[in-house]
Image 1 (cartoon, one colour):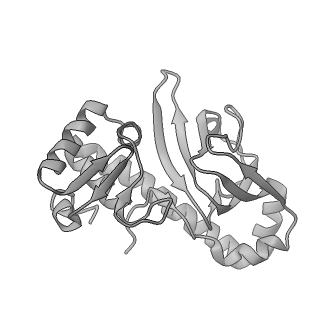
Image 2 (tube, helix red, strand yellow):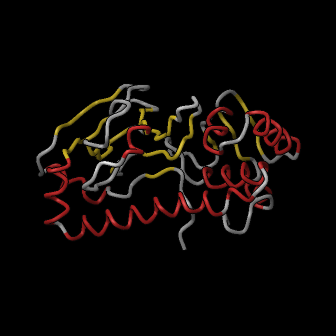
Length: 223
């Protein structure tokens, strides 16, 4: 049974050789660069060769909500035919230097319609992505800030952009932006976990020292 994921990687790695044979453009993004401009619908589709990106929502009130992370071996934003208004509020930026294969919608549509394995994989990927969104909407909303933080750390401990298992490379602001809670609540929760010797913290990183103890603070849905 699959657990919710905040970081997506290696979901399309089996198609890399196939993608290279199809019409595409190889692109490079520096850390901090946007994969497309603000206010622009998803017109380009990327297969990520190296590096990682974060996808987030910029609300009109100035708040930012980090939705997901995408790394090597996956396709983002996936393939769909229509432009959705919400896409104009979504941003995707490189959190490290990136190399990607870039496809237009028409180019990816041709592959989607002629390669049954790829089309099935696209559907399964969207299922995982929807599962991640439903998990947060139907489950995280009803937990305390501390449990939500523990759930997030537990899920992130298994997959990070640099492929480390127990070291989470995120700031307190990042955690706040993912969970939609104040930094005060994040700081308070991290302090509690640190006092219980469950985590170690240093600038921009959280080391999970006792994953079993962390899991005891998590909700059953997460585990």
